[in-house]
Length: 93
Image (cartoon, rainbow, N blue to C red; front, side, top):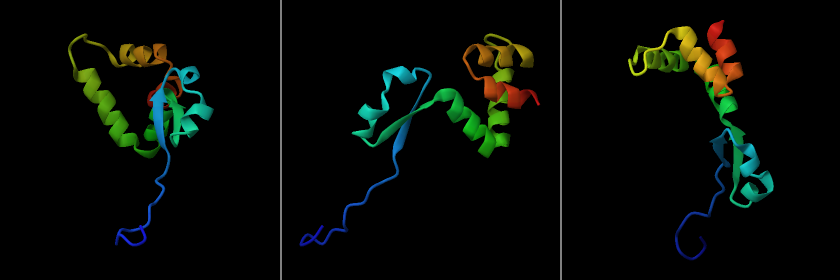
């Protein structure tokens, strides 16, 4: 800021909201706040594409939990019911 000895303001990259309910986050409203909405399934799939080992590690950790106990297929079926079709397809490969 001129005269105050502070650096000029900067614009950060837009932040995003991960949601399964995109209709409740209209892009024209979010733009006013420099935000964007992204489907949660796409967020997870993008992370899976970038960090396969970490996502698989998280999936394996979830399978190790005992409440409720689930087989790998049961766990993937749960993800399918949540709309994570791309992620499940990649995890099943």
